[in-house]
Length: 145
Image 1 (spheres, rainbow, N blue to C red):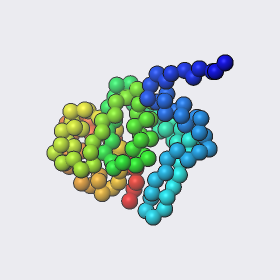
Image 2: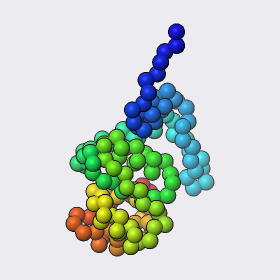
Image 3: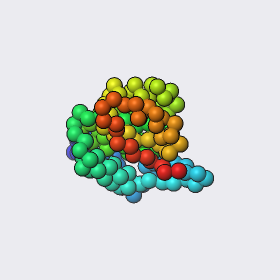
């Protein structure tokens, strides 16, 4: 008799269950500068969980908006899954989006937090962040370079 695996109810269920079945295997491989790095299933699961807990501690509640303005990278996916784990809404912003459009998206979404790829990107869109009506989003930079 074959054991039936329960169907995942959410995207996070699907991802976290998959990571749990591969705790010591490399599930993400990415290049940083000139070096290839791996993240195992257990490491990725822990990073998602830790960020979700940090978002919760920062006051992020179900339905809150959290923006991500970054190039494709492991941190983007980790942030996205952590946001979803909190029941919040991910507001993706293309890293090549015009500054005026970034400002519009931030104002329209009322994002409470903005994850951003690096200081260079932050400097490029700082005027859009500053012009946000109401409370400006808290900024979290993935890479300080």
